[in-house]
Amino acid sequence: MSSQDKMLDLLGAFSVESPVWSTEDLIARTGLAPSTCYRYLKSLHQAGLLARVGSGSYAVGPRILEMDRIARLSDPVYSIGSPVVRKLSQRTGFSALLSVLYSGAVMCVQQEATGDAPATLFGRGQQRPLVAGATANIILAHLPTHQLRSVFNKHRERIAEAGLGQDWNSLRDALKELRQQGFCFSMGEYRAGIAGLAAPLFNRDGEVLGSIALATSTESPRLEAFKALAPDLIAAAAQISAGISRAANVVDLPARALG
Image (cartoon, rainbow, N blue to C red; front, side):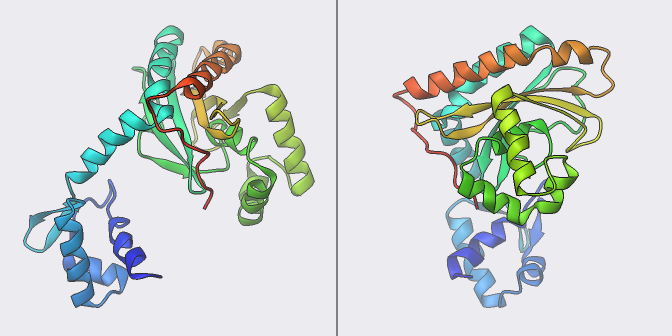
């Protein structure tokens, strides 16, 4: 691991569950020499990526907020998709999400939650595996073959558990069916109690960027009405993809790299 990677690994320690770290605990976690850890922390602090919150302790710094603002303004999935997601949620009465392919995982970039939204609903900045659940599986269905091969080789057991196939050929058949259908429906595959309905989002080159999804409880009395919203969801996804293709004032992102 390079020195840059080791420094960035310090940032990976910070989470909602562990938002504050002492220098001593970071040294223990990373295995870095104390002098090296102090040097990296100083650099991250000066860059605003970490902030001192006590004697020898750190939390995520204000520069992260600045970078989040840049992402909101420049990411076409967020800037173009957010108004569509908001209107879709208001019109249907169900929670709606925008997610993107991110380094071998799926990350939520926008959430419009209704009052009855499940407590464990996927939220902005949260990551989830690229297997299991409608939000992820509809992205998986549109990956190029070489990337799909990589996912299959790394996650065979998870793919089988998700019912997507026991081998390469059955996986390809299952994903072909999803592509032809244009949407994916799931019931508690990723998180128990949550039903999902998702459609893919594309850039101007036809590469998959992410997905738009509706979510509700698997116990919802409106579950049949929820399933019937697939055409509305596909139309919303097409609207976002078309907006991304036409946009001139946002970053024209290629499909995210698959780590």
